[in-house]
Image (tube, rainbow, N blue to C red):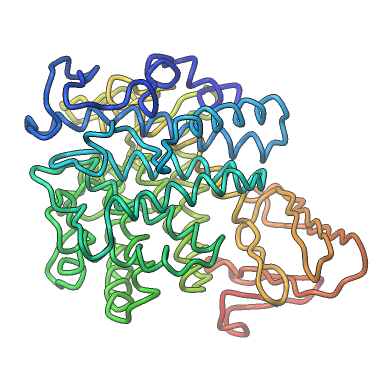
Length: 475
């Protein structure tokens, strides 16, 4: 938090604090893009340059999301106060109809071309969700549900087509991640309307005119289709398919097909390739790079898949990705990350590998990567909180230790508060001691993930092996 994660707003204030894209600087038909410098009309696009209009919303909201979650996980009052101020500043921009977004009244829910409508809303509302989950402030939940209702009114189910525009590009396709928000609201409120809206969004995306087509249903079930899109989009879109799969058997079949093929696009570190595009390639430790945003999005996808499918084996993939690819892209000492990287990384001087004569600014360490795009650095703020928040999973019988590493978990069972501490130096040391401290006497089950790479696991002196278990869980 004292480095690029906590200080990013000071490193690039013109993008985060000075540009009020959700408020006074909302996009109008004659907005000038800071990156483009040319006045254009939103409904008269010029190639894919329209993407620059929404870029700052992604930078701001993803960073704020990670900052907020980090502040509360670290229990730092000063950082928490700042996170609260950032959240309230965003809530203050909410219109009377519930709209939280980056377009003025003439353009909201009326973008005919490349746009960041859903994408800006998804990143902003994920930030507010993080604040709500950390504070349980009911006024934030009210703002979230009002924003959700506004979206559903702006793009009514069955009678509108948000994924049908002319020359849609990155922001338009990123918009499918609005399902992250609606699914989380469904988990919190049990409002089935949010879940069915997610299904409709995926089906509209599958039938729509989008630049990122890898997760469209027709392509997922095509045995000859090779992934070709922008990696970040591909790996984040899996979540929308997974939510649809929880509601329709045909999409569950499609999800199974996709996951069976995913291994061909993962490097030994677990990283999903795409630097920035996949372009029909499969993974190679030296020659196919990956982007930090893709690493984060695939990790988030694994977490959702574990919830939706109860496949604990996916926690192996998530933990492997976190400890290898995610940490491998961060400088071991300084506050900087690599935007793109290969597993066999021999140098970090803007070349993918030493014998390459092609320079790419993404293949180096930087605290911002402003010369390319400030997308990966904000996501580094989100990955560690996402890992820590999911180290333990609640179930009907008690809790499951899903990921291993030093942490403190606070939960309740039968209305009894429980603290579980993992005392360990994992992954450097494979021994883990769990200190269990209930507020009062209570009986519950504590289960442990059996790592797929482990030959055996010893708990309280009892040895377990894969042959004995035939499962990924120890009870």
